[in-house]
Image (cartoon, rainbow over all chains, first blue to last red; front, side, top):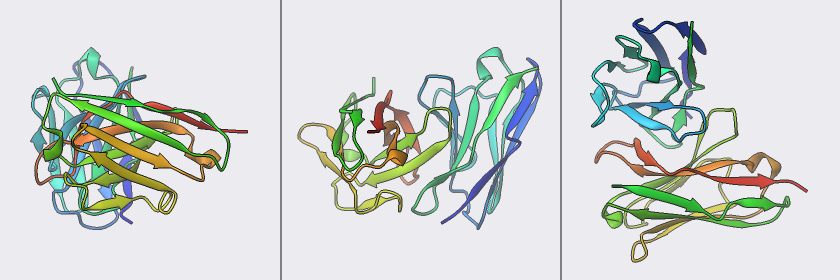
Length: 107
Length: 120
């Protein structure tokens, strides 16, 4: 199975900050990676698929990059509604696996 | 608007069975693969199972293989998860999710979830 490791597990940031979350796969997965945002009590929401493609309706301040084993989700200017937990998910092979999550908290 | 509505969760004893349903609307259900993903409250996400649009191709996590069965009824726009031999570690919120984009295995949207509690 492909293991997905996210870092950091939590980050404290202020509105307007640039935030970067890393995700590393235990083996190469090409560009088969998705990013989700989850707010408390809500279902996850897809932000990025195929490592860098923005899902329809997602603000352009979100961006994804990387390929192979190392990936990054960047929020260019953090907004109040972006405080949430973010997960990466490898889409390369079954069993599908998620990273452990990164909680973005208010500083 | 695409909507997914799970039902069938509840409290069940270890060794028991439950069947979850996911009613889909707002899209052509028979054109999309679907998945189940679970989450222990306060913890991370765990993929459970996926089924292709026709039901021909099915995949399971090792943790549920042999105990859970995914199926779909395209005439009823409904996805199912039959859960047998339930264990305490199956306690979680179960989400159904639609494959988001053709050619990629990412999920959007997700349902609101159905809580399964396995306890004596």
